[in-house]
Length: 193
Image (cartoon, rainbow, N blue to C red; front, side, top):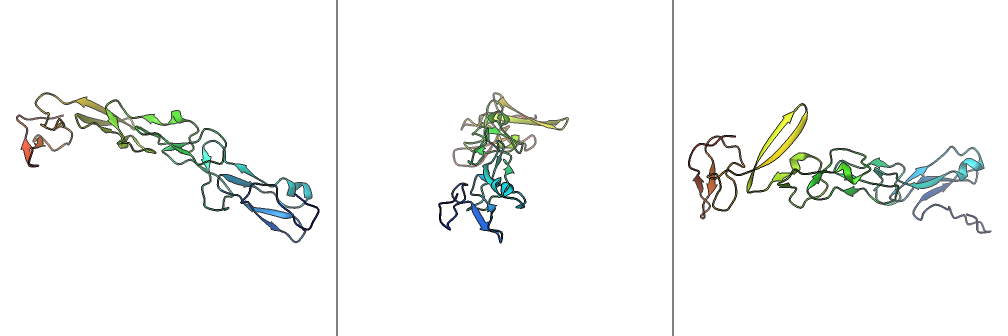
């Protein structure tokens, strides 16, 4: 943008970095956070005019500090971004996870199975972030390359005094609870999964 003086102000977002070339044309070097640089060979005035900073697309971000963005990167696993914008990717909400990079939809964040949670944590990247509530016990299986998690009600007799389930940890056939003094208390009977 020319102001009728020797001062030239590039018309891109504030924080973009430009450098004057020997031919008097300004070259776009980098853009502020949230943008990427569309740069072209500076052989003609028309090509020089095509330079600009563009907001990162859906599923991508550039969050480098300062004006150091030249390219956007895919949203990392555990996040998503629904539209082109200068904002960072959003984290998947609590009690969900997302294994995929470059996600463009909240629906890519899979809900934890019933009875499990991520303990208020967001941006989780795998099913292993979902843990069954303390009153339930867990069965995980890897069948055909996909991992599954199921939370089951603790059977009568395996409940501890503090309402947790003694079957939560796989410690063989000797299941224990902790008594009021913090000492291990063996559960009656023999238990297996």
